[in-house]
Image 1 (tube, protein in one colour):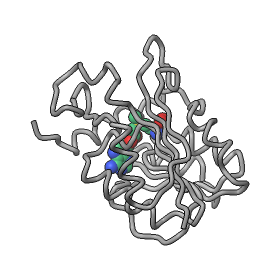
Image 2 (image 1 turned 45 degrees about the horizontal axis):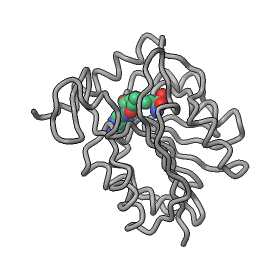
Image 3 (image 1 turned 180 degrees about the vertical axis):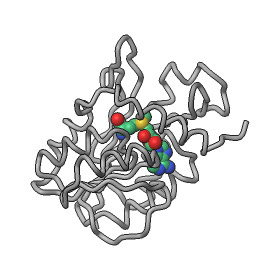
Image 4 (image 1 turned 135 degrees about the vertical axis):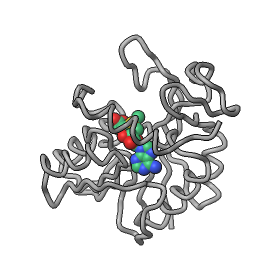
Length: 212
Ligand SMILES: C[S@@+](CC[C@H](N)C(=O)[O-])C[C@H]1O[C@@H](n2cnc3c(N)ncnc32)[C@H](O)[C@@H]1O
């Protein structure tokens, strides 16, 4: 099965259109905030309805937030126009190279939305875009998440339910980060990180620091 990324984009545009998804910050955003220096520059990859981007900016973090869901981004641009919080329509796997702009690069439930090739591009971009001492923060569904066993199986770690997902193999992902020169600051896997209704997905959290 070939993934039609235009349909994926339609899925997310529709998903956010009703503004019925909770706007409270995620548990991951609250966790990450404790690791950020004051007035950090943060780039969010796949901000969805903007709940975490808004939360960070309310806590004096300067945020550039990207998402492909253009209708939602246009709505957020009008609602939250500020120099400290900027929303952009964009594919986070194809961002322009910027050198040492950010203290933090944040991705919650979005690195599992892209192919491995795109993931590799994101990691290379992130290393360049981070300042020395800056960190990447990823939260993703794990290959141990029972949801992987549902829908249409595309490979050992990919499936299609109502949309595409590629579940994170934490060990493999960590190796990629180390190879790029990151140090691993934190890595944990749990089904308590992102409960949603009756669901308790198995989630990986990983923080890696650019040392040089
Ligand atoms: C599961 S939602 C997560 C949203 C938000 N991070 C949160 O936790 O509430 C995934 C989001 O990633 C976005 N997305 C997926 N692939 C993308 C890409 N290549 N570039 C930009 N955004 C992308 C989708 O449009 C969607 O809004």
